[in-house]
Length: 293
Image (cartoon, rainbow, N blue to C red; front, side, top):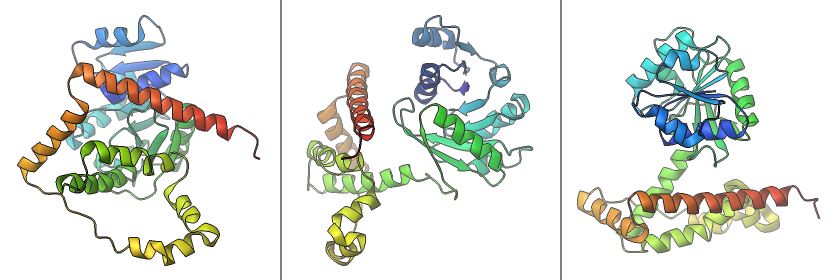
């Protein structure tokens, strides 16, 4: 696996691949790349580094690009990757908003380019949104799904290109409403998070939204839900957060007041997130592997 970009997402992909016994080459123009890789992986010879992009991808089965979220940069990177990577390599971008068709525009032999968008961090969150572009070969999609599955991820192929894809579009809607509720004084930052963790977050960790509709309707299923309480809930108009910079700054201050800021605080929250997410994933795996009762 070639990991292009040694930021938060790129290093997380590298740790995931390394944990699964893959050989990993990490490339990035940053001057401290060697020190960074050695601090993450020690002297393990399965993980190497190089500032030379062409050299990094020359033997890769999967190239996972994690560069800046700017279209010209990604187009430049993929033009070079196409020239140097093996003819059968999957060339994926971790982009959370830029489609494969935009990246591949004007590039020859772009049938190997697609989006492989992880949910952050990819070493922890199972989802990978796989979005082929207009030029992407179906064989590339199939191979990408195989490779991500080998990494114990859960790839979902999204057949229509749309900005933001699916997971981030859902997250944006929820975040927008949450911002409106806090700005309107309906709920505090802390209490909104408590509400999510103890209702929707817990529910969606175990069943999906539409699956929950079936349960919400009882024996009558989704049809009964939509015709009953769902009809009333459907009348609720979503809120619109204020665009006032002062109110945005106030919201940020509330968030920092609730959860802190800075490197040490960040590391504390990362450890808490990872510990709890691992616990949820392990519990679900244990339950799902038990015989049905």
